[in-house]
Image 1: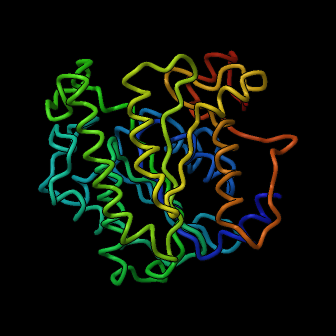
Image 2 (image 1 turned 180 degrees about the horizontal axis):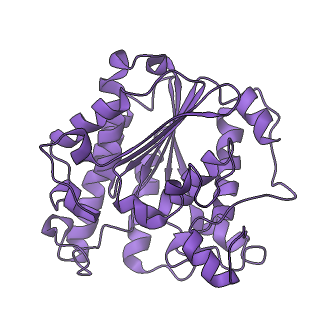
Amino acid sequence: LTPQELRQGCLQNRWMVITGASNVMSFYVQLIQLFTKIEPKGPLDPFISFGLTFAYSLMDVVFDETGSIIYINTKQFCEIDPNLRCGGSLVFQAGKMDWSPEYPAALQKALSEAPSGTTRVTMVMGHIWSHVARTLDSLQQQQDSYSNGWGDAKIMFYGQAMIWYPCFLEKWCKDSAMGSTNEEVLSKFQIDVDDMLQVGQRTCATDRFDCFFASHGYGGPIGPRAQSMMDILKEALAPYEWAYYIDYNPILRATYRIVEKGVVDGHLLPAIMVISQTMIWNTICPALPRTVCPEAIQMAPTCWADCEARIGGGGSAA
């Protein structure tokens, strides 16, 4: 199955929406590369660095029927609504994890601006499952106002949120609402997952949506708190046929001889995303032949500066 066959056979009139933080950047980059090769210093250079997940609140790209880019929108919430604060990391969320109503309103406004096209790929920066819930809310609440055909486009939705939950406990964020003990962290995680599932029952459960929810991939021993979060997520999703669960940890264990190190500095490599995306195409593309692991894949490095330092110069690296 070639990218062209996938685009023509499954991704026309399709809107792919991804919500997560730096760990979903590899997933997003691989989706973009179904249409165009990412080059350093080129038009899609902003989609390469993990760090830019803290610089933007939204990254939105529209392609035409030939796979050419016709629209790119990268903004912080404060650029959409001047009353909101600007700045890196959590500053553009007023230093708080949970969004106030102004943030989903800004998101809805930005999502409604895209022109018509054949396929759309949107990444909404979100650190926790309540951000996933608010993104799904925005897709539903603004459906009638999405002009240019996006109001009835089929949506492939992918959410991942896990690694930020202990940020206050581990003293790398200042939002005490995330919890000061393991019990409080897990309670916050459970509350947010339940919130997301409530929204999912009126969005993901409809024919318009195909929804996938992913664990973090640890690439090594999994601690008790992380295992508890994965157990909460898996058990919460299990009763719902519309909630597809992707656990990256068995994938990492099964592929360690092929991908010697599937996680670098806490981030999944693009090669691992090819596997999960193959699972997604097999789920949402019934008209296409079911695919298996490809004999060869082509990818660009997700972070040019890091890869160039490792290989000693420019050019591409797998």
